Image (cartoon, rainbow, N blue to C red; front, side):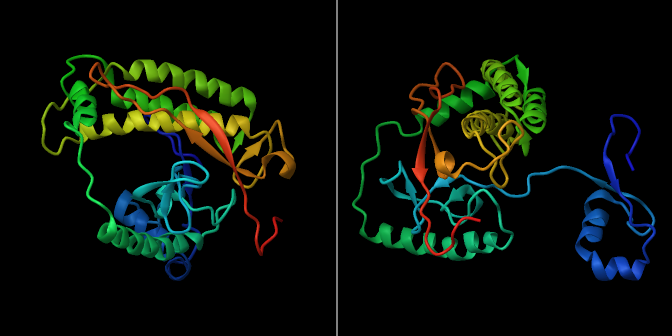
Length: 287
């Protein structure tokens, strides 16, 4: 059923027809989450169900030693990534549940070992004169602004367009609509303001900075999806329903030029450039 009431429109999971002992035996995690985080008793009450991000496919490209790739072949010396932030390419567009253990246990361990070895042998590198200037400029321009756009308003608009237009099922039209919204949000973000002007434990400021990166990431995701004119695993195009291994058996690589001056306010890098990296097929053939 659907919930009703002020500002509420959500799906409900109804377990009340099941015996409590059956619920405890078969659904212990779900019911405990409902009690702890929602204050709902699944024995007698329907449980609200909300959409959430389950798992990230893709991310920072790395090799199998977890060294971050600058492009298809060159690494960024001394930078390592593992877990859901990284894409070591051990699975394609279909996410396998057990692969999170592979990401964390195998590649987390590899990252630690590789980083430690690098730290022992790496030469000392002098820092530039003012290494924090870029971040200082970005953060202070937001923190000190007196009036402008609210973070929550921009984030809500971003969430709504991505959820509606760049979800599992998407089309060229829906994604172009999302890009239009994203472009507008980039302009509005230049005037983003926070209510908390403090320098300590300022979550308002943290969310404002995070929002800027989310807008950038949304643009990268949408442009990559728009260029992939096929359906594959978690990517489904209603206007290109067939999988196309001839043209799209490849990883999308997205690049931006770095921002060098943010003194005037939050700035976005130059437009996204898409490139591709070939898929290496070894023992397991695509199915």
